[in-house]
Length: 264
Ligand SMILES: NC(=O)C1=CN([C@@H]2O[C@H](COP(=O)(O)OP(=O)(O)OC[C@H]3O[C@@H](n4cnc5c(N)ncnc54)[C@H](O)[C@@H]3O)[C@@H](O)[C@H]2O)C=CC1
Ligand SMILES: O=C(O)[C@@H]1CCC=N1
Image (cartoon, rainbow, N blue to C red):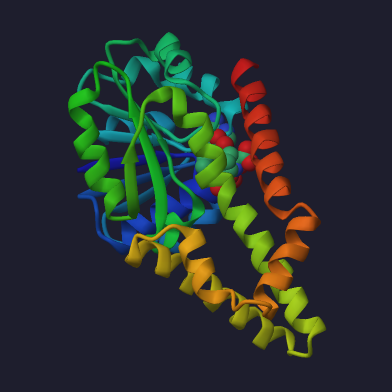
């Protein structure tokens, strides 16, 4: 598969890193106005770094547009005439729906909205995928590529905004929880480095327990909370401060914001 990524900032370069690590292409064009973030890939085999978006489109079967919502329309307009019915066009732009892309390049093109997160750079992204009508038979192909970079879920397009909040923004939400745990550990006497390792590994263990056991979080919580013990004391204090409520309100605020982006 000949792949191009147009826009190699935070997410585009993370996708590139993952694709290169898994050798998921026959050729890879990385196109950006500013190629600083992908400098490290100059010497990689079958990777071309360029400022020429049109060349990148012409030299690929699959084009991944990893641009800010404010830039994607003009870039799509500038390459539209070079996008054929055989291309698979993938957009990761948050808030930009398939209809907006179809309006620019045509509904007769294969268009897939893919929403990964930055863990894609280490092959651990939770990536949601939704396709337009024309691209229904290309979904499997997109899944094949992105399954090498983590886990994928095919969803209907009306859930992509919500998936963006939970999975893409979600990385930042979980990071903040880890940081707060680290701060708590330092207050209790650990060195910063130790505190960070304790928080991170415990977070990893909690997620792994859920994934591997298939159990509900409350079942795992029941196993930890000794009656009259310290865990329930801590949990209840957190809930009195609104932990669950704060998370849910944050998720909803994030969702409202992304819907504003969509409407602009
Ligand atoms: N950062 C994240 O965790 C996630 C971001 N997204 C979405 O992915 C998109 C990209 O986000 P980031 O990578 O964080 O943004 P970014 O700003 O880091 O990267 C965008 C890149 O596009 C380039 N660019 C701008 N105009 C261009 C043009 N005319 N031709 C070629 N390249 C051009 C910029 O130089 C920049 O390197 C956004 O729409 C964002 O909403 C989606 C999921 C997760
Ligand atoms: O914050 C943002 O708007 C983008 C979309 C999800 C992650 N980053």
